[in-house]
Length: 144
Image (cartoon, rainbow, N blue to C red; front, side, top):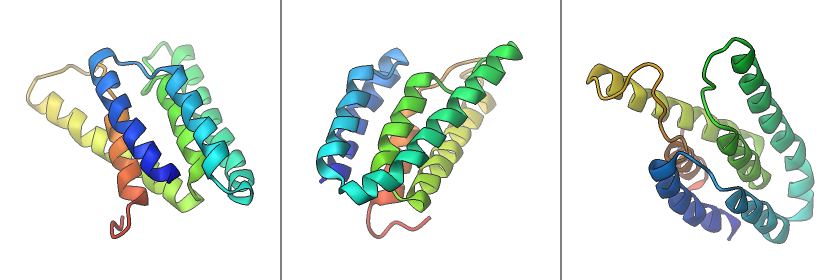
């Protein structure tokens, strides 16, 4: 049930991100609350370190980019969203989600650059790619 709820929320967040390039904190809090309700306690306890690691790596990447005076590859809303989603995933699914989202976003960015629709410093919404990666990682019958 949690995974279907996440897919529904991700579809809505994708639209919001496309329009405004933001991820509302309220949606992330809602996903965390849903995980506390629907994810079994033993799975949740095992997922907390992964969620913290995802958030930590994203935060350190953002800090490093800021120190180098370069734009961050993703926003902190995306990082919080990934962390919240990881509460309902095993480690393999989490890696599949991150890999699929990164590859899909890279292909989209290459397309935009190739057809001169965006420049190297342009921002693109990342939530639609997180949503696609999540679907690929959790839906039955889809193998990455």
